[in-house]
Amino acid sequence: MRDVGAPDDYGWRVLVACVLCNQTPGERADDPATALCWAGPEAVARMTEARLARKLRFLGLQRQRARILIALSRAWLEGGRDVLALPGCGPYAADAYLIFVEGRRDLAPDDHVLAAWLAHLTTTNGGKDPMSEQSTTTEPRTDDEIVAAKPAARKRAPKKSAAAKKPAPKKPSSRPAYPDEIREAVRLAVAARGTRNGAPGAKQHVLVREALDDKTPAGILKAAGVKSEKALRALADGSAPKDDLKALRPLAERIPDPFCKGRNLASILVAAHVQAKASK
Image (tube, rainbow, N blue to C red; front, side):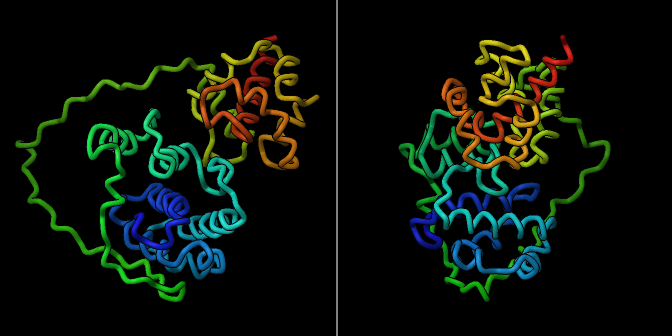
């Protein structure tokens, strides 16, 4: 992917690939991702939602993807580099950006594919990104030539008889078992944020609660730098001015997780505040 498009836009191309691979097998997203990356963020930002959606229709969720990609491209061109604040970008995209763009090797991504890539990059090829050594024969395309062509059908292996099939042994989960209170907090944070896309997970809720010195409702509001739950919810759903999020920075700097900041942190604090009030 480094060989496609302008070098300065590599980070944008990684985020485009993340949007297209969401809920889609990677091989199906290869052709449209390559075409969009050749076009560049300027061309995508100029496209209409309907036009881009037609070119992504075989991937599914084409209108949502088109809306996200256009908004993402415009934000990128305006200098947006805070991945979690970019349209359509959540923890998966942020991890991918840190690994492939910033070269971070000290992460523990939740996504199993990113974890496998990270292990590969850490142990082989001298830590270099193997994608940077791949070449492509795709010719540059203008924004008028972006075509999301369906990949060729793959040959299927002959079906085995029912008697020959053996159930695969279940692997024990490596994920920690979080208490019901944290799982409920995740649900409350999603509701406060207004979308599941980019919403923080249970791990982030635990880290934020550990960083809070005062876990009472008043203490949570004080840590957030606001005077009411209404103001805190405005930070979480994005209805408050963006500059108001600066009040969360002192707390965010104490939490060793890149996903515990901005609207994510505000939504976590909303959940903690609601649960603290209920337990009084």
